[in-house]
Image: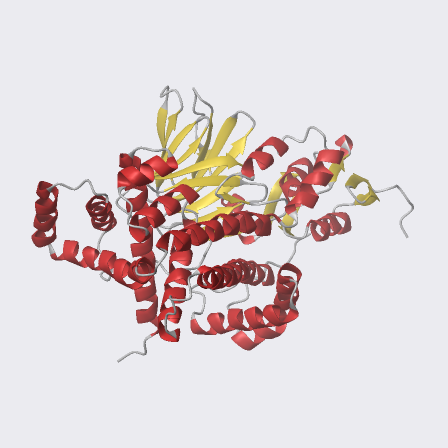
Length: 342
Length: 185
């Protein structure tokens, strides 16, 4: 479930029974109040309670919710009306949260749609509005998932999370994520249309590219299984790979600097100017054009991703390029005009 | 050409306050459209920072602001939700027959329970939340709820279990949070 609380401390082990025990207690509750529990079900429930102290502890949480929160509402003259009101507020708040998260995004997309026309990120971004977690242009965010795992969403990215049915599953709808998984008995997987990546205790980056998925592993290991089950491969820490629905590339050394976006930085170590501009594009609503003759110039430096104008000014200062802005929604990078040096 | 990498360690709270308080208040005011609410929430955000210092240091101004923004966003949503729930409760009371006149204490208890359930269910999909409310608050059977929502009673039980688990975990976290704030013996 999406919980944008972000910084809730993870439950302490020792105060809370394991996840599967809590889940079982919740299932017992659902059965017992459903009106469908048989006498045999009740006996089985009692046996379950009696069999382990952890089971009784989990049940205490059920009772605490039931007594503190549910009972006062049940004991009003018209619980139906109250339930309807709470539901109405719930629905309204969900849409308001979306709107809140989207402030600043709509403007950016409007500009992109106008200037870029066929911008490849656009479809993913629009799809992203209905995702559980999403970011707009120029926006990097960190989330804590309900299991305690941390996820950073790069700009123009969208992610669905599903923690039910004994599996921690993320679906990357658009863009790029960095994941730092929490320890939990349930498997942790990330899905893209090209396949499934299964974390083997770890920190890794996944990015959607045209028709393929990019994976870089910084800690632990990740197993790739392509969509058609055609290929599987374990990518260890310090390696990266691309894959599509049928084929996984050979692994290459992972570029640790790629992780820097989660801190709002782009670390360029001998990148081409074209690569640097590609990396900056998701962070700025305006279209950035680059004259081909300077596209292969080498760039070294650390650039602020959340301040693209500042980054471009740095490029202009040191890179002997000229950055101009003919229209508010158009940035142009050209060779610096030749002029006699003093 | 290199920008000096920002590698400051966690600045003390007063530096954070000086650097970001005005910015946060402006940010909140733009969203809330109300200076008094914005001032309250900005104040509360810094109180939380003091009480629960982030487990990690802020490497840069940007990171500190990203943290504050995430926190402030959650606080905005909470404020709106609390206001809406309060209004909903007042509307409900107004719609009750004269004979129903609960004591002030009882009213406060119901309102608090309403606020809590709304907060607990906030992360759930609408259907699961509704199934839970109809089953656990209204006392309808799974079959009746299934008829209402157009799903099987098995599905209703799944929704109810999902919602209950979410509530249990939230309560467990509250407990853990309370423990974390208790002074060391």
